[in-house]
Length: 408
Image 1 (cartoon, rainbow, N blue to C red):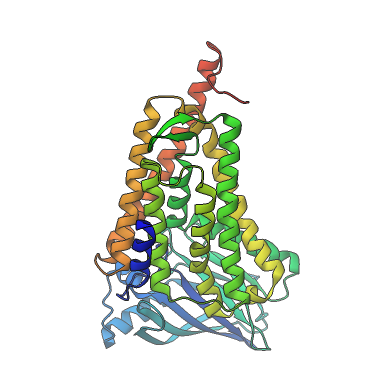
Image 2: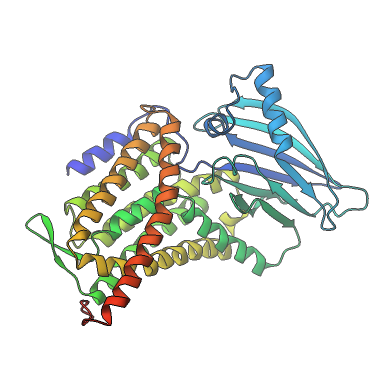
């Protein structure tokens, strides 16, 4: 009950909030004869943090933003010839939610080059902020729009071909769903917090007993599947049914879900009901991306195949994460060390969640949330290395003694 009251209180907050933990840029393309008109929206807070440029809306801030965009956008034809990139109007405005850098640009193709086939190299923010990604949307002649894909750190190029097949669009949707999870650190922290107690059983208000390997795998599969179902239902409802909620309370609720799950990993709040909680909070997490898709009026909203591909990408990544984490979770949960690792990981998740709540309610600067992202990126590699060490150590030790894992 107390968590319901806390959630209701946070949902009612009206203070300005940071966009998303990984706020997205939006790039809308209107492809014409020989040129492409481009509408660019970049989160103002992330732009200021990454570049150090002023964002006061004055002439100097506009000139610096125009120069930055021009230097970080490259367009070329399939044969490698460069397009002309001209950045026109630049302004700092509040369109929806937190303030944005809004710009209009024109990409002009070389003579005799196809205007509907080109490659964009987009380095705006993605090099400075590895968790950031830019979503590209193209206008159709009938006024509707299609999601073309996204770029992020390490994958800054997007090839646009308006004659792409349905199979290509489906593949793009899968990739977009996968990137949505991989670059959504609040989603990953929520999932991690629910995975930590999965090998354990609760007794007398504490984590004491241990599940078998088979039971642990079943619990993990239920958790990620329930989360995906909740995520998918909200996405479908928001895009096809028109469900809407203000951005700020959705972002705060996502951070609260991480905090609640982290506390549960420390002390059982809802033992045995983790899949139910994962599904319920999945409904909230789904709204984060659904808001962007709906505001863009993108073709994914009217394409069942694209929606299926997007959610399939989410599920595949989550299952890969579970399969990668399962061996080390099972091995470590049989040791005394796991109690300390679980406590430390859950404590960090709680700290990250508290930071996001503070940033999204205006109590903390955006830089605090971005600093948390930087730490999470490094911890991801540490966790991967630790998992490999644990598994290799167990395989070596197994040759000397019977396996400690029950499989029944």
